Image 1 (tube, helix red, strand yellow):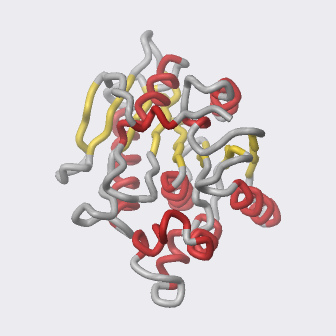
Image 2 (cartoon, rainbow, N blue to C red; image 1 turned 30 degrees about the horizontal axis):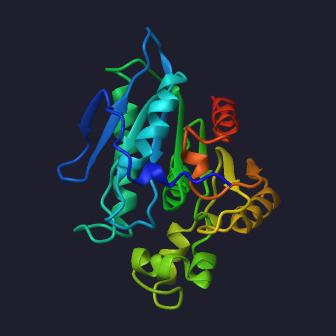
Length: 255
């Protein structure tokens, strides 16, 4: 299994523009636009880090730069996280929603095909991306990359030292409405869903995506699971990993 954690510390590739979608210091995103006339499909990326402030958008720059090279306009979103004023639930989700609406508005200024926008999220970002898809039918598809797709199960497993409790403000008994509102497993999603998960992920177990896919298919939602053998948590968002071509091909198939 390849070690891709270098993306957490390597200097990120530059963006074409950094744009603000709100007034808070963390309400911004990095935009990258392919060369050529377009219009291009667009991909909004919601980074992970278990919703905590110490993890930011920089490590997602490598994936976004690779997707831009492959022909996507990419919008690498920053948002308020646990530890930032207003971060957590619902503030983080409100930022992701505002960032998505801002991207759609950018289609009037940049060569973006508004009918071919997908939203991707890695780890905790997968939860935010899927929750967004439950409330906005305008996207072409949504992608969970090793996503935390079931928040009650994540609480049961105490993932990352009870990160879910920090994010939602309590356990399922104390704030049941937060779990119901935020957990993709409890939401109805009408656009196409692609789940990509490394079989050997020791941070967010692949079984969570397996169970989610089975449950959602029983509800007649459009879900496809791509489980990649001998792969951990970070390889699927590392363009230098051996399995990256599989990820890129699956994403291209959505648009």
